[in-house]
Image 1 (cartoon, rainbow, N blue to C red):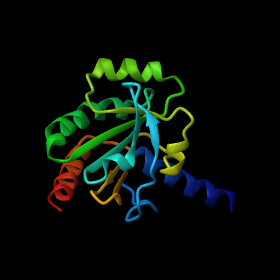
Image 2 (cartoon, helix red, strand yellow):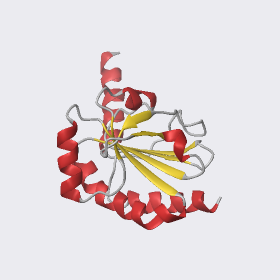
Image 3 (tube, rainbow, N blue to C red):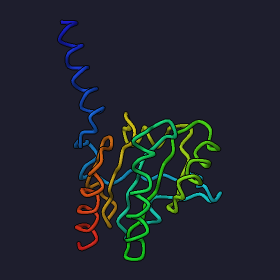
Image 4 (spheres, helix red, strand yellow):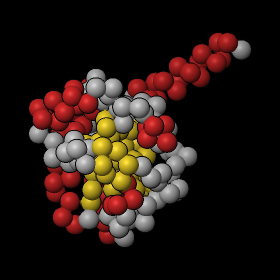
Length: 166
């Protein structure tokens, strides 16, 4: 019995490590609302963005794939912000100064929020880094992506474009 449990655990960890796109219990549900302090010092609330397509990207400074993905997400944000797309980067580090240094280094322009107590991460069932959640204009979770591999940004682009056309 223990071997079977270990096998299933190993397979689950491999799926996350491989950056699998995973469905989530949140898909099709209203996105849990939250308010967090941003890198500019103001509090931002998810519900304030109702009417826009919103990507929520959970990340950490110690996550290599997060570092790789962030400039690509920033390009997506810059390209579609003016047509009703917003991106909220939710950092889960205990120390926001490390996150601030990383976003400065990478030249990220999208809003970065700080979830040091990991309350929002728990609401979104974040178990790996990064996790990207795409919310439609009505506030429902439409897509959840676990992990990141090169090429995922094309899926994000297709999904965001599709939701912007709705």
